[in-house]
Length: 191
Image (cartoon, rainbow, N blue to C red; front, side):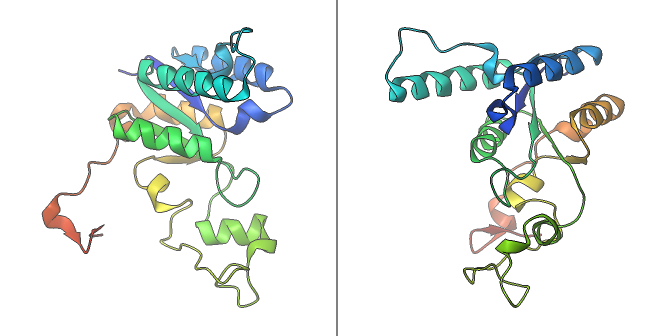
């Protein structure tokens, strides 16, 4: 049973980050779940070196993920056509630790469709490659496959994700098992 959720996402960078965290935690409480928000803990005042502050924040966030039963991640685009890199790390860390992960995004569509819709400046002249000539991942998933496969995604906000999480139970929250060696071809898992 999921009793606590680590609330991952770029929300910590908002101007109202603490108020946003309080709102997310209150939302979790309405569903009978304890929300663990990265800004729940303050960097000790004695730590003035930015590198030491960063290491403290990293350890504190890892500690919250370890304490949580699962992770709820805001995987909306952030500063471009991909989710926040710190959130992506936290999702990967949680999956590696065997913790269920659940994500939410504001709109449906494939990753390529979402990029074309929200970040057309990133699309090259041919409409298939990006402006640097690189392929745009297109597996019919709303995010990069390394996020879409292990983390069931809800189109909507945190409230909709929590409602679906509690309505459907933990069955949707279990991380995908790593493919067995017999299912791999050239180091890539078979579909």
